Image (tube, rainbow, N blue to C red; front, side):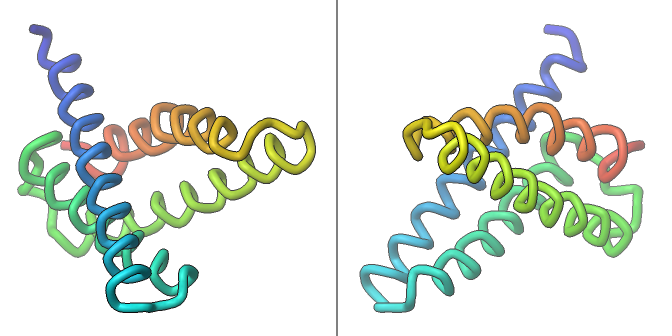
Length: 128
């Protein structure tokens, strides 16, 4: 398999694992620890992003030569931008175009994950 394609699939798997971590932690915080949904989302999103970062640094993009702090700073900017784009996209599709909320989330997640997150992680955050 082409090295670039392999890297792409690894990054997608990393995003999936980060998303599963996010959802599992959210559910645990909200249901078991009785933390508010909003704060549970902050905790789970932060921890899911850490999982995604570690997998990407050491496996997906295999770039440990760039200083950790430099990559982490860039990664935080990408995650913040991603959250903003996803929130705006869901708002537009759900509130303005009246698509089903879950369909809106799926559409936006795919577009932002492939068009924004992967591109910036590949060519900026984890660039060799």
